[in-house]
Length: 126
Image 1 (cartoon, rainbow, N blue to C red):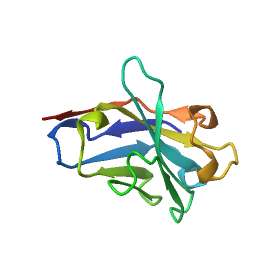
Image 2 (image 1 turned 90 degrees about the vertical axis):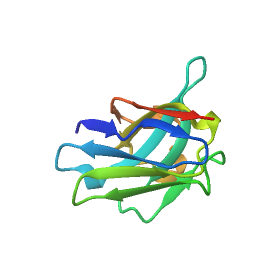
Image 3 (image 1 turned 135 degrees about the horizontal axis):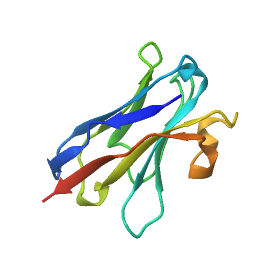
């Protein structure tokens, strides 16, 4: 499986963006999918995960209520809808896939993910 994130860009505070992550391969529905973000000088930060079926989701406290993760297994895509964006949401966002067997709610760490896509930059300006 290869992952490719897209949808990043420049947005003002309070605005919205929708990130997409397209996956190649036929086993997409078998993976827990996640989004992480990274800013220079900081560690990768957990953002959200979603179960294989899409029924279960988990969010970092910093984005809960503002971001929504979803997936379309028929299209091999996972999404991150971001609303009410804040300056501190500025980062490079990465999608990742896990086939570790761990449930989505136990994967708040980058070590739990096996495959990573190239990031997409989100810049929030005032």
